[in-house]
Image 1 (cartoon, rainbow, N blue to C red):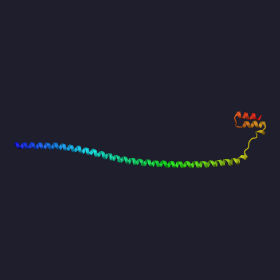
Image 2: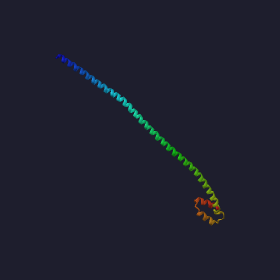
Image 3: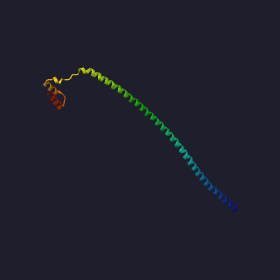
Image 4: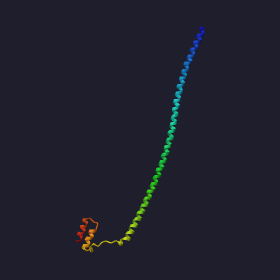
Amino acid sequence: MQGLTEGLNGLALILRVFEILGVVVVGLAVLLSYFLFKTFSSKWLEAKFKERLERFRQAQNRELEELRLKINTLFDWTTRLHQHEFEVMSEAWAKLNDAFYKTMALVSPFQQYPDLAHMSADHFSEFVASCQLGSWEKNELKGLSV
């Protein structure tokens, strides 16, 4: 019986060694899988992040180009509008000058001026009193007539 007991103790010892080895192997497997997961997951996350960042940059560049195109279009339109405005203004000014001088030529024969030299003294003083001049200007006119 003693041999059987020793055999069972030896078997228990072997099982205990296998049990410890199993725990160690499982622990190493867990550590290895954690290390692999951490390494590959961080690389995978970085790759996904870079991919999203690149898509964002492309979208941003596309939007910037669209805004530049809009700004350039508006600037060109404004420049053409101002150029046309200057052309129209110069033409309108030339027509206004022509109309002014033609009107002056037409109206100038009909203008009348009072002849102060041939007015009587009473008529002159009444004329000066009815003028819209300052009192000092009226006094100067009265002083010139004397």
